[in-house]
Amino acid sequence: MVGKIKADVLQALDAWKSGKAVRSIELGHVHRMIEHPGMSPRIDLSKRIDRDQERAHAYCFQIIERISLMVQPPEDHATFLGWCDGWEIDFRKENPDLTAEEADAAESLAWKALLVGWKRATDGHGEASYIEVTSVKRDKVRK
Image (cartoon, helix red, strand yellow):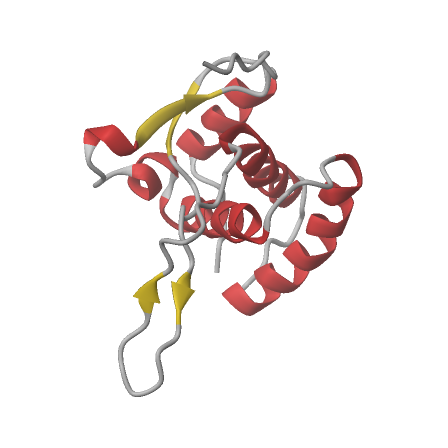
Protein backbone atom coordinates (compact mmCIF):
# COMPACT_ATOMS: atom_id res chain seq x y z
CA MET A 1 0.00 0.00 0.00
CA VAL A 2 2.84 2.41 0.72
CA GLY A 3 4.52 1.91 -2.65
CA LYS A 4 7.20 4.38 -3.64
CA ILE A 5 8.22 6.77 -0.86
CA LYS A 6 7.44 10.37 -1.77
CA ALA A 7 10.37 12.72 -2.42
CA ASP A 8 9.51 15.10 0.44
CA VAL A 9 9.62 12.23 2.93
CA LEU A 10 13.09 11.27 1.73
CA GLN A 11 14.13 14.94 1.85
CA ALA A 12 12.93 15.20 5.47
CA LEU A 13 14.81 11.98 6.29
CA ASP A 14 18.01 13.28 4.65
CA ALA A 15 17.73 16.60 6.50
CA TRP A 16 17.17 14.76 9.79
CA LYS A 17 20.14 12.46 9.25
CA SER A 18 22.42 15.40 8.41
CA GLY A 19 21.44 17.31 11.56
CA LYS A 20 19.37 19.97 9.79
CA ALA A 21 16.12 21.22 11.28
CA VAL A 22 12.94 19.57 10.01
CA ARG A 23 9.56 21.30 10.31
CA SER A 24 7.11 18.95 11.92
CA ILE A 25 4.26 18.84 14.39
CA GLU A 26 4.33 18.09 18.10
CA LEU A 27 3.85 14.37 18.63
CA GLY A 28 1.84 12.73 21.38
CA HIS A 29 -0.76 13.88 23.86
CA VAL A 30 -0.01 15.66 27.11
CA HIS A 31 -2.89 13.99 29.01
CA ARG A 32 -4.48 10.58 29.04
CA MET A 33 -8.17 9.91 28.88
CA ILE A 34 -10.11 8.38 31.79
CA GLU A 35 -13.02 6.07 31.10
CA HIS A 36 -16.30 6.92 32.83
CA PRO A 37 -18.83 4.07 32.49
CA GLY A 38 -21.99 5.27 30.81
CA MET A 39 -20.37 8.57 29.86
CA SER A 40 -17.80 9.82 27.39
CA PRO A 41 -14.13 9.51 28.36
CA ARG A 42 -12.68 12.62 30.01
CA ILE A 43 -9.22 14.13 30.01
CA ASP A 44 -7.23 13.20 33.11
CA LEU A 45 -5.87 16.56 34.23
CA SER A 46 -4.22 15.02 37.31
CA LYS A 47 -1.06 14.11 35.42
CA ARG A 48 0.75 15.78 32.55
CA ILE A 49 2.68 13.50 30.21
CA ASP A 50 6.13 14.74 29.29
CA ARG A 51 7.02 14.19 25.65
CA ASP A 52 10.52 14.34 24.23
CA GLN A 53 9.94 15.56 20.69
CA GLU A 54 13.46 14.77 19.49
CA ARG A 55 13.21 11.20 20.82
CA ALA A 56 9.77 10.68 19.27
CA HIS A 57 10.93 12.07 15.94
CA ALA A 58 14.11 9.98 16.09
CA TYR A 59 11.91 6.89 16.29
CA CYS A 60 9.68 8.21 13.48
CA PHE A 61 12.68 8.74 11.22
CA GLN A 62 14.15 5.35 12.15
CA ILE A 63 10.91 3.77 10.91
CA ILE A 64 10.98 5.80 7.69
CA GLU A 65 14.63 4.93 7.11
CA ARG A 66 14.00 1.21 7.58
CA ILE A 67 11.04 1.31 5.21
CA SER A 68 13.17 3.19 2.65
CA LEU A 69 15.69 0.33 2.66
CA MET A 70 13.05 -2.33 1.96
CA VAL A 71 12.49 -3.89 -1.42
CA GLN A 72 8.84 -4.57 -0.55
CA PRO A 73 7.26 -1.97 1.78
CA PRO A 74 4.33 -2.94 3.99
CA GLU A 75 1.11 -3.45 2.08
CA ASP A 76 -1.23 -2.53 4.91
CA HIS A 77 -1.34 -0.81 8.27
CA ALA A 78 -1.49 -4.06 10.27
CA THR A 79 1.74 -5.31 8.65
CA PHE A 80 3.37 -1.92 9.25
CA LEU A 81 2.43 -1.99 12.94
CA GLY A 82 3.75 -5.54 13.27
CA TRP A 83 7.13 -4.45 11.91
CA CYS A 84 7.08 -1.41 14.21
CA ASP A 85 6.75 -3.72 17.21
CA GLY A 86 10.19 -5.16 16.45
CA TRP A 87 11.71 -1.80 15.52
CA GLU A 88 10.44 -0.28 18.75
CA ILE A 89 12.29 -2.98 20.72
CA ASP A 90 15.48 -2.10 18.82
CA PHE A 91 14.98 1.63 19.36
CA ARG A 92 14.36 1.18 23.10
CA LYS A 93 17.78 -0.47 23.52
CA GLU A 94 19.37 2.97 23.12
CA ASN A 95 16.32 5.01 24.16
CA PRO A 96 14.77 3.21 27.14
CA ASP A 97 12.77 6.29 28.17
CA LEU A 98 10.62 6.23 25.01
CA THR A 99 7.04 6.49 26.24
CA ALA A 100 4.08 4.63 24.78
CA GLU A 101 2.61 7.99 23.71
CA GLU A 102 5.82 8.95 21.90
CA ALA A 103 6.04 5.57 20.16
CA ASP A 104 2.39 5.59 19.07
CA ALA A 105 2.64 9.16 17.79
CA ALA A 106 5.91 8.45 15.92
CA GLU A 107 4.41 5.37 14.27
CA SER A 108 1.30 7.33 13.32
CA LEU A 109 3.27 10.17 11.72
CA ALA A 110 5.58 7.75 9.91
CA TRP A 111 2.64 5.81 8.46
CA LYS A 112 0.82 8.95 7.37
CA ALA A 113 3.99 10.39 5.79
CA LEU A 114 4.59 7.14 3.93
CA LEU A 115 1.04 7.26 2.58
CA VAL A 116 0.68 10.93 1.63
CA GLY A 117 4.10 12.60 1.97
CA TRP A 118 5.72 14.67 4.71
CA LYS A 119 4.07 17.99 3.88
CA ARG A 120 0.55 16.59 3.69
CA ALA A 121 1.11 14.50 6.83
CA THR A 122 2.07 17.59 8.80
CA ASP A 123 -0.27 20.15 7.17
CA GLY A 124 -3.49 21.47 8.64
CA HIS A 125 -2.44 22.27 12.20
CA GLY A 126 -2.44 25.60 13.97
CA GLU A 127 0.86 27.46 13.75
CA ALA A 128 1.48 26.89 17.47
CA SER A 129 1.59 23.12 16.84
CA TYR A 130 4.61 23.33 14.53
CA ILE A 131 8.12 22.74 15.77
CA GLU A 132 11.55 22.22 14.29
CA VAL A 133 13.38 19.07 15.33
CA THR A 134 16.91 17.90 14.66
CA SER A 135 18.81 14.69 15.16
CA VAL A 136 21.43 16.61 17.10
CA LYS A 137 20.76 16.48 20.83
CA ARG A 138 21.10 19.89 22.42
CA ASP A 139 21.63 20.53 26.11
CA LYS A 140 18.27 21.42 27.55
CA VAL A 141 18.29 24.47 29.75
CA ARG A 142 15.73 24.45 32.52
CA LYS A 143 14.39 27.75 33.72
